[in-house]
Structure formats: structure tokens, C-alpha cells
Image 1 (cartoon, rainbow, N blue to C red):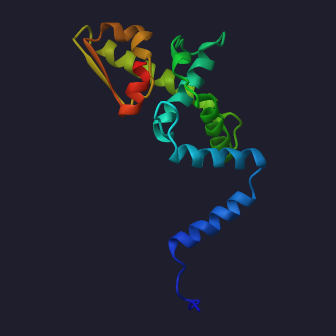
Image 2 (tube, one colour; image 1 turned 180 degrees about the vertical axis):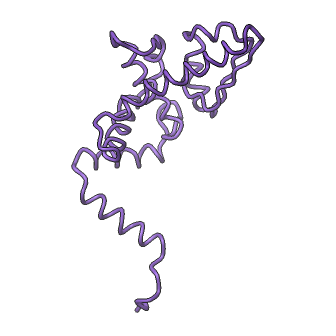
Image 3 (cartoon, rainbow, N blue to C red; image 1 turned 180 degrees about the horizontal axis):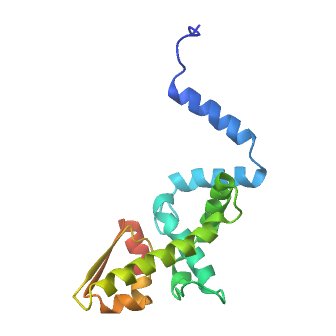
Length: 173
């Protein structure tokens, strides 16, 4: 028998907390968590795992925003990069973050605001350079397409995107 003063191993505490949290979830959230576990270990048809696949969820949300009358930007290419998991990953983001922040569709609100903020920051930076040659590097670019639709980037000398091989391959298709 374990000494009551001996702390439980971290993995055991983690399992206990996971079981308590899981018991409090509704069926839709449980389903999404099961899908997350599957996506974390199983690549999709394009060889993309969950971490890189989050780009597809973001593309789905940029596409939704681009179709709005009062849109913050128009990413007319986003629909091309949603992939087979984009809508479901977006739903996962919205359920998990909505649960955490107590705001329905939190990620659907966050993605357009984040995209607009990045666009404005890039535009301000390029404008501040007053016609000087600029190069832009997008680290962890995912399936970002702003190089094709953000007007201020037309004046950049070079635009480079960096991401994992599976995303770069998916984007080239």
C-alpha cells in the first residue's frame, strides 16, 4: 500500500483530473475531444496532423469572414485551403475556447480580429518605411494567402513563407 504522505505520480493526477473534466462535458464536447485525440495521432489524406492542420481551421474561418457584407478583409483564396478537416477543426476551436472563455464562437470572432490586426500592423510597418525596399517573412504561415490580396504587400521586394513540409506541400497542390 502507498504511504498516504507520498504524493501521487503526476500521470495519475492528470488521469484523475481528465476523468473529472470529461464527466462534466456534454456529448458534443466529448465527441470533439475524441476527434482531437484522433487528429493528434492520425494524419489526414494530405499527411497533415492536428498542429499543422489548425491552418485549415483558420482558413475556414477566414473564408466565412470574407463572405460577410461587413467583412474586415477579403481573403478570396481561403476556401481553397480548408481541406477535409477545416470546418471540424474550427468547431473544435470554438467549443473548446468558448467553454474556456465563456463566449460562444470565440474563435470565429478572434480569427478575423487577429487577421485584421496583423494586416494593419504589416501595412503600418511598410508605410513607415517610406518607399524603402522591404522583405516580409511569415513564420508559421500555415495556409495564409495575404501575399495575394493584401495591397501593401505588393510593394515588398520579397515575401517568404515558412512552415512545416506537410503544410507547404498541401498549399502547393
